[in-house]
Every structure is written in C-alpha cells, then in structure tokens.
Length: 235
View (tube, rainbow, N blue to C red):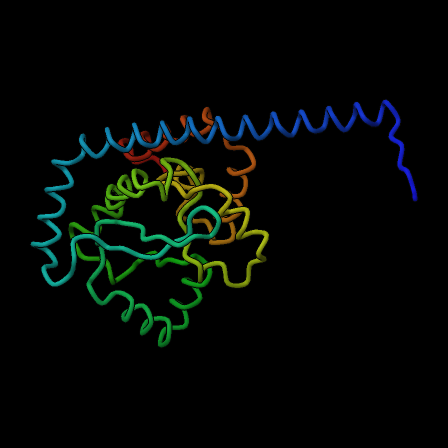
C-alpha cells in the first residue's frame, strides 16, 4: 500500500485554490442573477415603451408586403449551443431564402460577397420603404425584447448566430461564443466600421467582448447603441 503524504504548505495551497474557485463561481452566479434581473426589467420597459411604435410598424409591413408574416423567425444559437427562434420584424420579401439561393448559384460576385460578410450590401430582397427604414434604424430588432423576456437572449451579448454560420470553425470557438447568451446589441453593433467588417472579424469582436464582459461594459454598449441609433453614427 502506497501512502501519499501532503506537506502542510501543499495542503494550504490546495485549500486556497479551492476557496478562489468557489469565490469565482459565486461571483459568476451573482453576475448572472444581476444580468437576468436587468434583462427582465429593461425588456419589460422597452416592450411597454415601444408598443405603440411596434403596432404602427406591424401595420406598415402588412400594407407594404401583405403576402408574408409580420414577424420573421429563424433558428439561432443561445447558451450552450441550444437552438431557439429569434424574432424580428420582417424586412424581406416572403420568398427571400429562395431568392438568396438563386443569387448565390448564378452570381459569382454576390456569392463571394456573401461568403465573406454573410450579408449583402445592396440586398434586392429587402422590401422597399419600410424594410429599408427598419434595417437602417435597427428597429426591425424590437421583437427581440420578447426573446430577452423568455430567457433566450440578453440585452447585450454576442450576435445570435445560426449553426450553419460556424461551418469551418472549431468546436472550441462555438463553445466560447455560446458560453453566454446572445444580445440584441453588442460590441460589434456599436463600432464605427461595423458595416465593413467581415464575418471572421465579427466573430473576433464577439470573442473579445466575452473575455472582457462586465455590467459596466454592457451599460457602455447600451448607451453607445442609443447614440448610434439616434445620431446615426456608424450606420
């Protein structure tokens, strides 16, 4: 029989390490609780405040594009890679996915642009007038406050990615991105060069946010988001 004897100093080091890890978990739990309280409070206020505007937007979408639904929903990833439906006001024509497949198949330049940015600068699928306005002002994302209320998103976080967008990325990257809930707004949405960033650069910005996230940083991003929307800075 082999007996392992720990020196007194070694025992103290292990105890100290255990205390530090426990403290980290307590801080993480407290932060998650405070974030959830903030998310619920903020989203409830926003839903009540924007309800008249959302009603007007819904009517305008139905008038401009009566064939499709008012709300667009799409599967995205949230905490621990779980899928959920993200909600937005519909800004595209009802058969947008079919049109995208046709464009990617038949136009080399559009295909290269989409693979690089995961979006199109001059997207012909967007409904004229109301669709363009909602995209430019980001008001199409107002229904996501319900996603926050349901617990699938936070006010601030990485963008909500589709699973297919991570094709070619390592599982460690996916695990890191989905280690926190996606946000209505985030680091990438408030940087001045956001419209010129590639998809890879967006992922790097979200990773940077995750490593540096704090309640103070989240508040800064929220105020910066309001500034961007009101003053059209960086849009």
